[in-house]
Length: 156
Image (cartoon, rainbow, N blue to C red):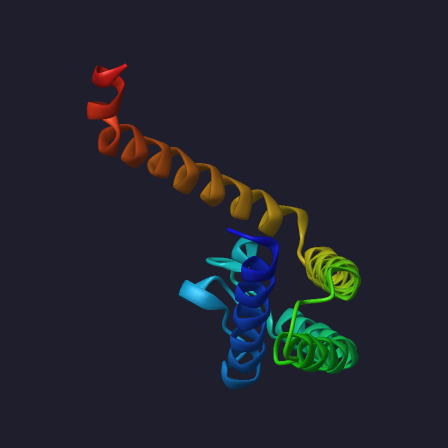
C-alpha cells in the first residue's frame, strides 16, 4: 500500500472512530468494560469506584476534544492536498504524515494515562482477579488459535 493510500485509509478510519467515540456509551467495543478497557471487563466495581471511573472517563473525554479538533483540521488539510490538481507535493504529504504520527502518539498517551488512573482506582484483589480472568481468556484464545491453524503446521 502506498504511503498516500495508507494515509487516506488511516484518516478514514480515524474519522469513523471519532464519530463512533461520540456515538457509543461508556461501554467499550465488544463489551470490553467501560471506555474500552478490557481489564475492567468482569470486575465488580463498588458504587464509589464506578463514580471515580466515570469521572476519569469524563476528564479523559474532555482532554481528547482538543486532539479531535486537531485531527479534524489535519484531515481537512489532507483532503485539500489530495483534491489539488496536479502532482502531489510529497514534502507536504510527509509533513502531514509526521503530524498525524505525533497526534496519534498524543492520543495513545492520553488513553494510557486514563487507563492508569482507572487501574489506580481498583483494589489489589480486583486487579488480581482481572489478571486471572485475562490469563484464562488468553490461554483459551491460544488453544483456539492452535486448533484453527493445526493444518498449517502440517504444510511446513
